[in-house]
Image (cartoon, rainbow, N blue to C red; front, side, top):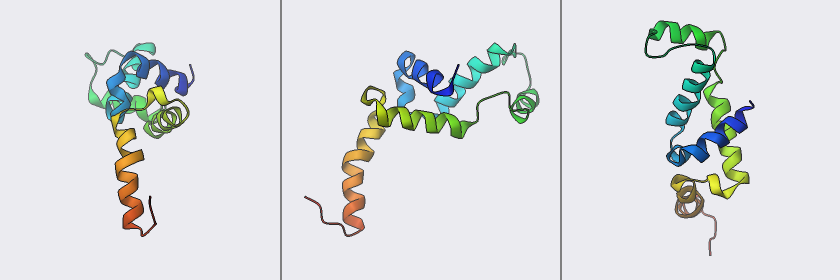
Length: 102
């Protein structure tokens, strides 16, 4: 399954992940670990790091980019933080940079 599909599936299933990349990473990685037969409850952190080093898990930046692109393209996947950035904070940044606003 493509990463964008994994992100979409998880944002539909767990809406609170829209505003928390770390929880989104953990959710996707736990699914991927399960798919390769890695029991996270019975294995060590060192064994987990070996799986990451062997590129068996989707890199965090790829998950983050897929989530950002999905939120840009499809408004239903936008969380509260997205709306804050696009309204209040964006207006403040423009004012701080000296751009004329409304």
